[in-house]
Image (cartoon, rainbow, N blue to C red):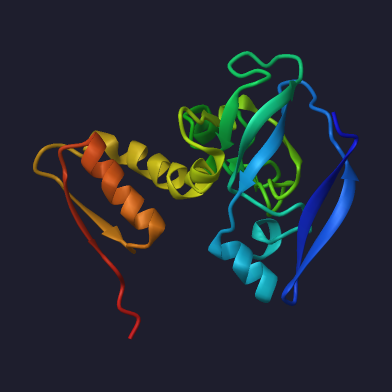
Length: 210
């Protein structure tokens, strides 16, 4: 395996900084992913051309960029059971503490711990590198037959609305109507998920800011 890797950082000011770093090694419950694709999100563009607008723990903290990665596991630390070396996966971009009520129910995006709720590419080293560490196999989704470049954007555009729709499913009964505000990429995916997973009627639209 390579001993060093390339990694991209987003310092702002319309710049991308490339660095050479040692390849990390996974610890207990972690895997090392050889990144095959890492797509660029609108939030990455904002960081490149301006600076990330998030404050405090939500702000960009000078880590390796990229929160939409896919690739293949090349090393697994002790305690990994569900996934192993050779598996092709995408990575959900937000990790949590793993012990709060929301994390235990599978909703790490609403983890209540300010210390441990971190997103790849913003508060945790992300996928714009040759390799990346994933600290928990709970964050991995099998690629199936998808190519990495096709699957990578789904780590955000599909898994984020999926968490919201899954939470709402008990209320999406026949006769219910769901309003989806914002019909960009995530909104369109939410509409498709609702139609696929429930009998509810969907109404979608954008907010007029005028």
